[in-house]
Image (cartoon, rainbow, N blue to C red; front, side):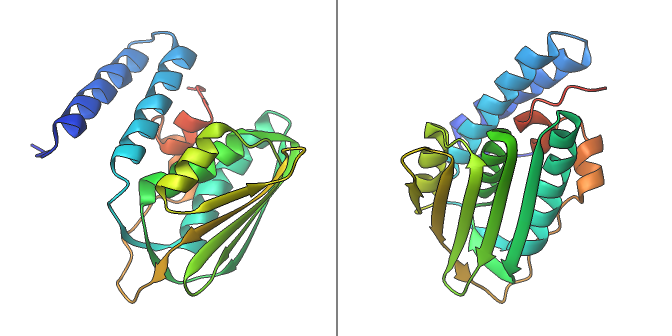
Length: 193
C-alpha cells in the first residue's frame, strides 16, 4: 500500500483511480481524459515544492517525442530542438505539465526549443498559443513567461540548479504512447485504444 501523507494527495489519488476505472469500463473517454488532465494539473500545482534530479534533455526528448507522434496523427507538425543537458533539480510534474500544455496548444506547425544551461532552463515556443495555464505552471516553477503581442511566440525562463545527483528513470516515448494513462496520452486527450 502506498502511504500518501497529505490529505489532498489521498483525495486526488482516489479521484484519479476512480476516473481511470471508469475509462477502462468504457465510459465517455474524452470527458474522462479531460477530468484526468485537470487532476494531473492539480497534483502538479500542489506538489510545487517537490524537486528531484531530472535529465532535462533526455526527459524532454522522450516526452515530446511521444507528443510529436500523437500530433502528427492529427495533422499538426511540432518540431523539438534541445540544447545543453545534464541533471537539474526541478519539479517533474510541473515541468511535464508545462511541456505537454504547450504541445497541446500547437497550431498547424509549432516549434519548441529547450536550452538547459547552468542555472536555468529556457524554453522558446513558436506557433503555439499560450494559455493562462502556461503562465500558472511557469509561475509555480518559479519561472517567467514572456510572450509576444500576437500570442503565438513565447520564452519561458525557469530557474533550475544543475546537480550531480543521479536522475530517476523515466519511460521512453513508446512506453508513454502505449500506457493509456501516461501524461502524454492524458494531456493530449489521446483516447485511441
